[in-house]
Length: 113
Length: 113
Image 1 (cartoon, each protein chain N blue to C red):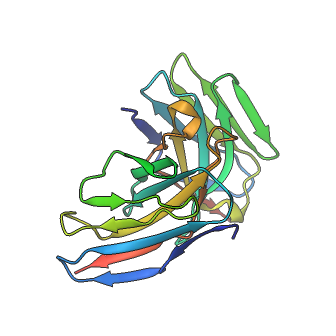
Image 2: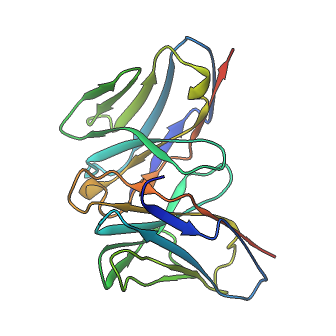
């Protein structure tokens, strides 16, 4: 089955700086890669996703890049703000997610004032 | 909070008892999922269902059972066979074959003593 590795487990950045979180996956058949943000005690919420036919996607301060050859994808957050503090999870799935997602273990992003 | 609900928010049970967690959605989604989240861990897939009266095991199905008698409902039973049932349980739904985003419910925190 699919295996997703996520790094780092904790990331502390100064407010206004950029943050990068990286994930690798094992199954070359995976074709859908979402990123979720989870605040303490809350449900995960999708912030951005990318499909395997696209190399990069951007939504305001958030971008995701995908390298299918190397089987890794990354989340980039620019101009970080205090409200960006949360746990971020990457995930991967073959079949566009219809068979369920395999998640990384999460990155706790801390924005220092 | 958009259309997918879980109840109760907190649940306490004694070891050896079966317990059923509720998940309801009014989004008209075909696919529904159950995930388990442990502290410092990503989400792990327990069961999923792409259509009424059909469901498949995920990565950690042992000790759990589900049913899908209605499109709107996907209850999860945690049986006494589950060795370590204390966890945060999240239900999700998605449009099967659609944009693939999985929408999560608010979760049920189960404590078994």
